[in-house]
Image (tube, rainbow, N blue to C red):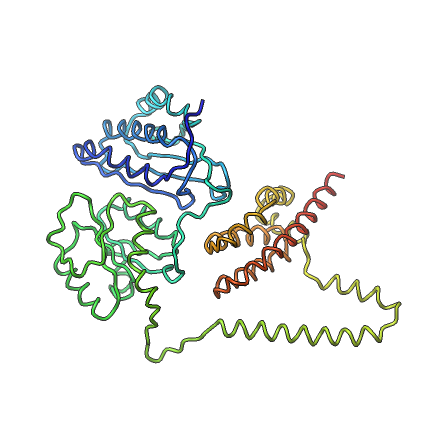
Length: 448
């Protein structure tokens, strides 16, 4: 039977967990690393207390019995996390025997697992791994976007990351990718890229690896470029030797998605407020928005001319010709569901077209309600994520008119025409209804 459920921040649970294990971590000199998928929501509904107890039990058991000096707790969730889904908590490469792990999982976790409706997964290929699945709900239906940067200018920066642990580096790299950051890891990658520090927006280095030579290089680069210098720091490490006047800020372990989000805000908030444009010699800056607006204008003029031309021609037509004209017009209109194209697309990748159509219905039926919500909230990255998923599915099943509508919405996002988005809420509702009607018609024809 489940215990008390409430909304909680998964980051707060993880940070409290890290602190509670400080004594044994220091005693055995074990580093605890969090590797969190971008698909894991920030706010969940469930029994936070039981989850905290469960994770404490698991990590204490591992710390007490392993010889490993780095333990990674992986958190994974499905891509299409909509309302209630399973989150996996995994510790791999424990270096423990299968018997010991199995005995612990089956005898020590019963109470908290029952409160959480959790399940133990034992994989034959990796029997020493600890793998627990727990179902959680979202705070809001469809609220899968967890960190919203206040300005798009904060996205897509380039980072050089140098630290001793490859596992730490990999987890940080994954968290930066959520914000579309390109992260080069290690000295070898830095050399491969030409040993040029000026190409990076952020340089992150572990506190233990800083040297006087590195600091002099950073200081030199900062005179000509706005390089952000970040120290990756253990909470108990002495940073007195670091040249603090060149340091932009500190990234404290354990690193979680919230840490990266706050780091980006801190580093680039001032730059965004300034909105200063760097001048570069011999470089022409093209305002693509002007080209897009001009294209829209020409398209409207073209259709206005065609409409006038059609009126004149229509008045000269005989009644007997009207049927053929209407038929031709219907053929010219964008196809709602091209079943031939959809069948070809799914066949190429070994999928069933009918099953893909049913999956589309499962995922997007009533999605017009969700779309209206995120447009009203001006949740840009939720809208972008929604469009990417919709575009992929529409293309697969041959939903051409929906694909065209998605392209239009994406274009508005790219050129920051957010004021126009509410118009597309109604358009999407109508287009979705038409597409669902066509899908059901096709599926019903298969049953006959």
